[in-house]
Image 1 (cartoon, rainbow, N blue to C red):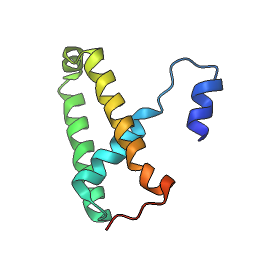
Image 2: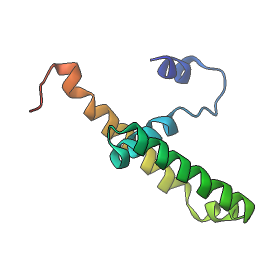
Image 3: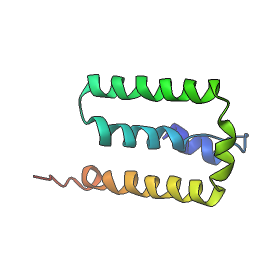
Length: 94
């Protein structure tokens, strides 16, 4: 809720609220409820990012277009929103 309020009433136009939900969703899809798997995944992601920084391969991000990133973030927000409907409506999934 604070993120939504900040997005509506905040004074900075460039906010970064969405990527945290995207990262959490992707991590849970790969690691599941296991904390050890999530930590391992995070460790390897950090190693890859450090390797790319040392090799100076940041220019590769210029080849990913803004509409692709926007669509990815929009789809993940829809997925997160619809996954919350069962709790909002009190539906129990077997």
